[in-house]
Length: 591
Ligand SMILES: *[C@@H]1O[C@H](CO)[C@@H](O)[C@H](O)[C@H]1NC(C)=O
Ligand SMILES: *[C@@H]1O[C@H](CO)[C@@H](O)[C@H](O)[C@H]1NC(C)=O
Ligand SMILES: *[C@@H]1O[C@H](CO)[C@@H](O)[C@H](O)[C@H]1NC(C)=O
Ligand SMILES: *[C@@H]1O[C@H](CO)[C@@H](O)[C@H](O)[C@H]1NC(C)=O
Image (tube, rainbow, N blue to C red; front, side, top):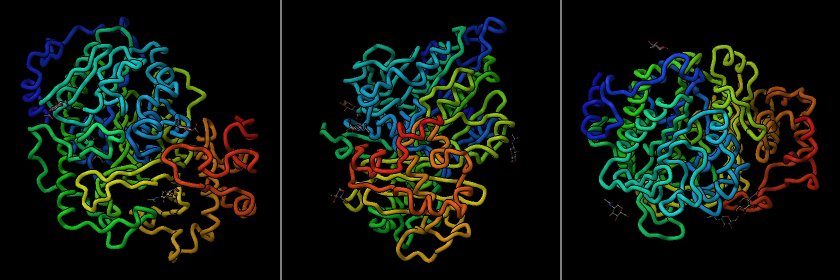
């Protein structure tokens, strides 16, 4: 294969002199075999940054296809619950929705590493639980935003046997990165490509891990294909003074895919505006803008090639150590990405499918090979999944539930698993790339949303902080161009019911989800129907609940737009306001 020979040739050059990284089988350290070594499975977790599913990035990654898609299961309906790096990563590593971590932004006061620490989460997240379960834990790459060259030791990140973190403000500088290993001071790598450095560190930790007799967890978090970000001044709000240019590929990939373009789906730079709020006001992109964004797209595909090679190298090493059959490899991204859909400049932070429906592939013992499943899963499910795979107890605080990973679990999930995704967002959205219309920053991008996918329905419903509403029927309108709740809609029936009846059910479901905790996040219909007689939207649509949903329930609403999770901006919350479902209320009895 062209890919792997290129890979080895370049590895030889790039990593010359790195003693711990053997290029030939003979130079690998001896691994304890048989009864000496634990039979508990290992976990290798690869977490990319801003990788899309809907712009076809997986079609350009041959090693990921060969080793992960063909040897594992692709979870086609996997979602992040908040489409922004740091909050999404905190949800992923804690198993909690952002409204329960209250890490909702990339920087203080609402987010970033300092907020993760002040919320007590540095003492209560996955690597710590894995160590408690007897695992060695390793991490290299980006952990969170605002984890910086000045605060990395205030305090150190807990829970890792070995760690080597990318640090701000250099995290997204492909050729000028800063990494910080264990308790050492940060090391700056000017001129060297971040993916090459990361690859070296990942292989090093894998070597360390296999020399120990314990089972291990290794997370590798490349920055690709995130934009290259350079901060222009040290201001209080760095996002506003930063340049978001296309990612920088490794030199050997810079020429690839010269003809690739953003898929021209129906929602690509559409003639009519779509969405609500600031999205609806976006101007149509000029040809020059579209051409630039296609270039941006190609640079993303090229930057991902380094990740593809990294996966090849990890699989190859696991194989040569005899560990491949006893290792789960999980591949995903923190959030998705859009380029040009709905006239949006490159970016994330929206609730559209391109932003929230993201790659998830799992391979490992018992996981069906070359398979695709439609069961609905989210990032809050991953921490429970990992604990379940290693046989450790799940935690009551989880807002998600383990993802089915075997034939029989997947078959059962098709009948029984929930069908909703709780999506939330606070703050602003940012157009990356060039600042075409002088309006890169979009404030009041605060909303709550819901995805629901059942046998006969496939909806997205949202309520924004200015109280605009959206409802898209993705079976009829996969590009989310026709908001059924817009004033001029021509549709008045859905699923054989008047539209307002369906919308009322979705609103109540969102009402529960927006402040749910633990089991309520997993079984929100139980909060509305404690008798357990309603398990999905179909059941809830029974006419005998018309009064309940259309008259008795409070509606999701905001009193104003806030950039963070400020309770009194978010409508009725407490029992004194009437029938509400905030945790701690009466319904908690059945938990
Ligand atoms: C790398 O970062 C350092 C520290 O900010 C800076 O002095 C240097 O100019 C940067 N180099 C490049 C190539 O951007
Ligand atoms: C995977 O499945 C596809 C069709 O679903 C098939 O064409 C391909 O040969 C399969 N690959 C492997 C390695 O089994
Ligand atoms: C954002 O929301 C605030 C408070 O709800 C409002 O005062 C302001 O006008 C809004 N700004 C924009 C740009 O929509
Ligand atoms: C979330 O954090 C912000 C910033 O510290 C704080 O103002 C807010 O009250 C918190 N929200 C909740 C619900 O605790």
